[in-house]
Length: 410
Picture 1 (cartoon, one colour):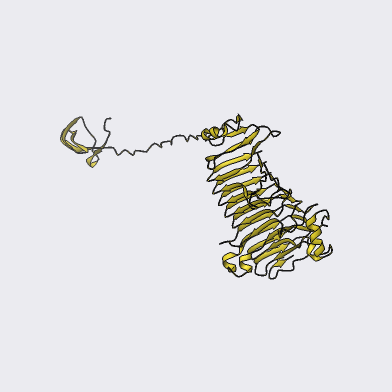
Picture 2: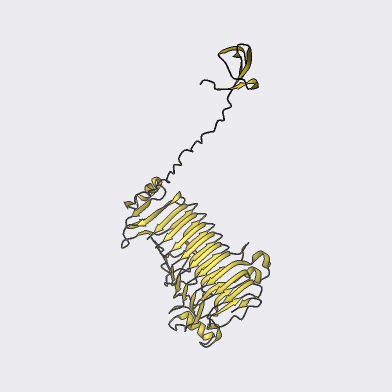
C-alpha cells in the first residue's frame, strides 16, 4: 500500500510554487521548496506513525461431543447345556445368556472386563448346577440359577460344595444354593466357599441345609445382602481374615443341628484362630436372626481367639472398624452380640429378645436337660472384650453388657 507522509516545514515556512527533491534517505524525503523568488526552504517528509490495533481473533467454537451410547448386547436366548461352553467363548462383556432348563457345567476360569450374566430363561424350569468350582474367574453373574448338592456316602463333612477361589467380580443374584443333608437329612458340607477373592456379591439368594451355609476367607469387598439362611447344622456364615464386609438385611433362622456333634451353631460368626490378621471394616446391619422352631444358635459371634489366648498381641490382631446396628435378634443364647478384641466398634439400635426354645428339637431337649429353661444362658446379651478400645454401645434393647469395661454404654 502507498506510504503516507507528514509534511514538516522548517522555520514555519509555507511552500511556494517550486519544489525540488534533493535527497531521499531511509524513512524520509528531503526537498527544497521555493518560498518566494528569492528564498528556498528545506522540507522533510517523514512516514506517518501508524498505530496498528490488533483485531481480536475469536476462539473457535467449543464442540461438545457426547459420550458414545453403549448398548449392551441383546440377551441370547434358548441356550442348552450342550451349547453353554461355546456361547461363553464368544460372549462379549455385558452379555446375558438365557439358559433353558437343564443341568449345566462351566469352565473353571472365565474372564470378562464387563460381567457376563448366566440367567434362567424360565423361573419355573431353572437352569441347575450340581457342582461349581471357579478359580481365576473375573466378571461373572449368576441370576435365577439353582445350585443343588446331593449328598453321597464318602463326601467329607467339610466338603466345599460350590467354590469361588482367586476370583473377582462374581455375583449370585436371586439364586438358590441348596443342600440335601446327610443320610439323616442333617446339613452337610460348606454351601458356598469363597477364598482369596474380591468383589463378591451374594444377593437375594436362599442357602439351606448345609453344615455351614457360606464360608468366606482371605478375601476383600464382600457383600451378603437380602438373603435367607435356613436349616443349617452349624453356622449360617463364617467370615475369616476378610476386609470390607457388608452383611445386611439377611434372614437367618430355624437351624437343624445334630445331637452329639459338638457343634456350637452361630448365625453369623467371625474368628481369628490360626489367622495372620483379623477382619476389618465390617458392617452387620438390619438382619433378622430368629431361632424359630429350630435348634438354638449363637447370634452374632466374633471371638478373637488369637488375642484371647495370647498367641498374638492386641495391636497385631485386633478386629478394626466394626459397625453392628439395627439388627433384630430373637434367640435363646447369651451370645446375642459378642465381639472380641477390637479397635473401634459401634453397637447401636439392636433389639435382642429371649424366645423359648422348641422342645420338638432334639438338640434343644439335650441342652435344656443341662440348663433349665429359666437359666440365664438362654438370655441373649451384648458382650465385648475388656481389651477393646473406642467402643460405643448405645440405643440397644437387651439384657445387659456384663463383659465390657472402658467404653461408653448408653
